[in-house]
Length: 192
Image (cartoon, rainbow, N blue to C red; front, side, top):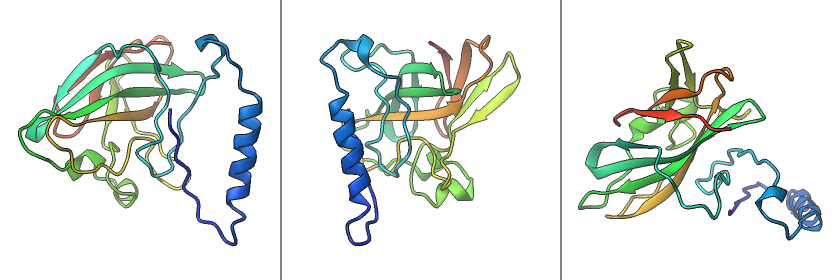
């Protein structure tokens, strides 16, 4: 898993807390297996690199496939309910077309607060048909969507890892539908 920190430093002081956190994080590392991993939650730093570690090392099982415009294709590989009260949907966005494409701006949705933070999957929603509720992508305190952001132009055959975080529906809701503007919908089973 790679994490990219972006900080605006004045006099270099902002980098100091990051170095301390990294140093303490390395001291607490163990050489154990997957059972030793703490639960992680992703936070948006405006970078497409910040992606939760859903199933590191495991082959990606396809839970749903959503077809989009211009040969774009979203393969959902994980839908995980986390202890923090949210659901993380992870997968891969692929250009199956025969030419380079830009990820459509419509995927960011139409909310001004999300749009001003750049391209994202902020227009995605989860629908709980049983509970008759729709869940929108979570945002941080600065209004940035908790999804993959800032997509580059995608070449033919290129794949990008993506994630989206939503508020969790009630525990008895085990199936939801993922909706993404301009894409087909996909039924998903929640794990965890």
